[in-house]
Image 1 (cartoon, rainbow, N blue to C red):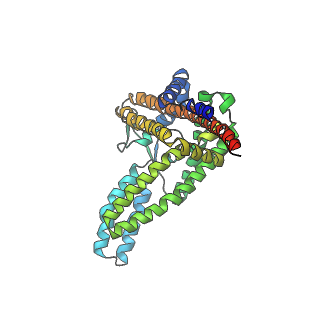
Image 2 (image 1 turned 180 degrees about the horizontal axis):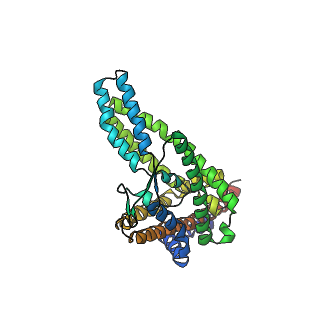
Image 3 (image 1 turned 135 degrees about the horizontal axis):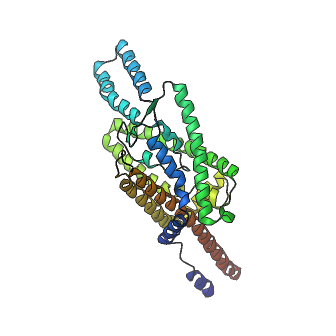
Length: 341
């Protein structure tokens, strides 16, 4: 038993955050071509046309307010609609409908969608053109098409980065399987988000009607709950590209890894978030009408791709370490069980 305990005490330490980050940055530094896809995506969102539903939404909202007035809706309640209508219309006007291409949890990073921008958007080629969608059918169909394109592009991007980070032999999943598992995982994510978020919105709305303080307390509790879910949710795609698992098994593997390595994995995910979001504000310093914005796109693509590569390295090393630890615990417990018998 003493020998078994000595073996457990000599276990190697878990993968470090800094070592994984260094490995990821080395991968992208040696293969700078990996940043081309996110750079091209950002350039298109910048110089290409913006797709808007602002005019359609404004017309629908005006018709709705007119209908309420005709049916004798109380003036006090009507003031809420008329006061908030310009804010809602302005938001929908600034919303780029092409944002449907940026899918989660697997997608191509886009600086142009992550940070707010002025509207209309100035570019070195002039004011960005705006394409207005005029019907619900076109809106719905375009959203589905853009989402599907985002799934394909995101799956290809993750597949390329995983192969460069871990080697084609280890992460060489086929493109057809990549696209199929990406779509399946994204659909499962969407269903899970609706199941979790919708009841939370209803609860907060009910508490707001009872007491705003209760609603605030519930909101902070929900934030704490969501933070606890961030780690297992973050690693849900990695099993597909690192272990060649299907989407469901990849989710279960992420939950298993997070269960045993939550402190270290939580620190790793927090580090990635702070680096990514913090540097996003640096890359957004150049004005949209300056060609220096291209430098921001390149920097953003380099950092996000390096962080993604780091996460693949961390996921592989942490799972290998965890498997080694569990095997040594099992082998150490067998002799003691035999002695007891």
